[in-house]
Image 1 (cartoon, rainbow over the protein chains, first blue to last red):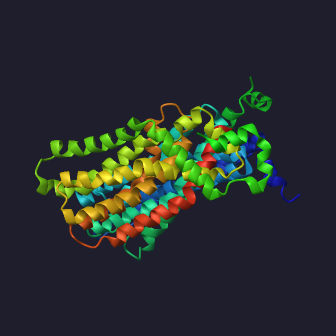
Image 2 (image 1 turned 120 degrees about the vertical axis):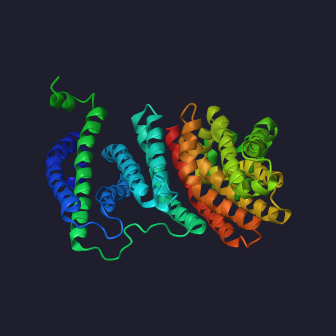
Image 3 (image 1 turned 60 degrees about the vertical axis):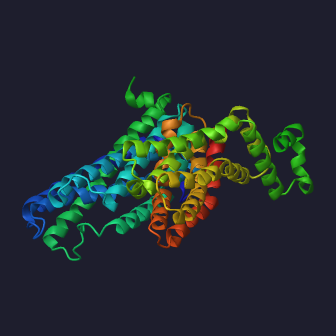
Amino acid sequence: MAWTWFHRLASPPYIYRTAGRLTPWFAWPAALLIVAGLIGGLYLSPPDYQQGDGYRILYVHAPSAWLSLMVYTIMAVAGGIGLIWRMKVAHAVAASCAPIGASFTLATLITGSLWGKPMWGTYWQWDPRLTSELILFFLYLGYMGLRAAFDDVQRADRISAVLAVVGVINVPIIHYSVVWWNSLHQGPSVMYLGKPTMPPSMLVPLLMMFLGFTLFFGAVLMMRLRGEVLLRERTATWVREVVGT
Amino acid sequence: MNEIAAGAQAEPFVMLKTPQMPSALAVTRLMLARDLKLASRKASQLVQPLAFFAMVTTLFPLAVTPQLSQLRHIAPGVVWAAALLSSLLALEFLFRDDSQDGTLEQFALSGRSLTGLLAAKTAAHWLLTGLPLALMAPLAGVALGVPEAALPGLLASVTVGTVTLSLIGAVGAALTLGVRRAGALLSLLTLPLAIPVLIFGAHATQLAIAGRPYGAPLTLLAALAVFGITLSPLAAAAAVRINLE
């Protein structure tokens, strides 16, 4: 009896309704937190004593970087759940995650290189973090490419889930090998977020942005999940009732 | 040609008589013998990746500089990038013929562990493509001005590294089994996963050229190979099963 909630998760109409109901609960707090965090980060917090105002891109860059990794992990866990328990909704979650995660990764790369221009004097530096982020972007592209290569949705789901699990095991290996590679070639670059103590006027907006971005991801995931479920169930009668044709 | 598959086809009940089943070691030996024999009848398939490897290494002196003193600096990168690319080329015929004529299906139905069978197949693939590539690498090294004293290091690192490349490639080839014209997709899937091999392999080669001990990166390469041997046949078997469904 305690497990009925779990079994209900496997029902596409239930997921469709629940995701729709949850969307505003993610979206509104996300909007409030991001607006408050931006005001706090861009106007209220003092400029950095070394980087001046340039550091402020951190408020977008760091949360994007965090989500780029978190979304990949969620995607792999959802894929794993789909493989093990053959849960179609889990595969729909994984499929919805991929483009969002790839977008956050791209945002991280772009904001990182914009920050690099004034700080390092160049848009691109073979910095370990930037490089492993770039490789993560390729992993997302490979995942989406593999998914798109199959016409049969169920096969695409399960094959790409295997890839996501293989990828998530490899992400730490790739990351540390890249860190090791660069530390051998050159001294440490400008330390990013390196100062152990951040004044609260910087830290509070940053934490708000982290939470806001995470909730924003939740909202976008819910919306994409609804679309994904509708697409997959397009022949079902409940979809016809919902869409009204 | 194919005793395992033939046995399963003719008499499915053989499976029940466990004492008469050949041991895992015997099956591995059969699989190796079979793959080596099949490959010996299509020798051109084996030569092409090697010719490609030699061709790519030739491009760099033409494009960069013919001076050996300068080529020596880029030699590790050239050899490793060329090895990575030509191992990618060789992947195409790892599973292709067996999947087209249904042998792979028979493997999956044979009652033997598909993981073990694919591990044996990958071992045969390494013997046929990785090992010849490793033997070619010192030749390419000499042509790029690598000093003689560094050749054992180059040989050792490419030998160990290609084991991991074959294992990663087996996963990639298994994932894209059902995809037509998978070439570009296969490279997008496998190259990011092969980056640690490239980093440690090229680093070991660099140290060998500089005349310094290269044991540390070589050990890390071996660690990657052991990690791959443990996990990659499992992932490849899962992907093959999904593709055969």
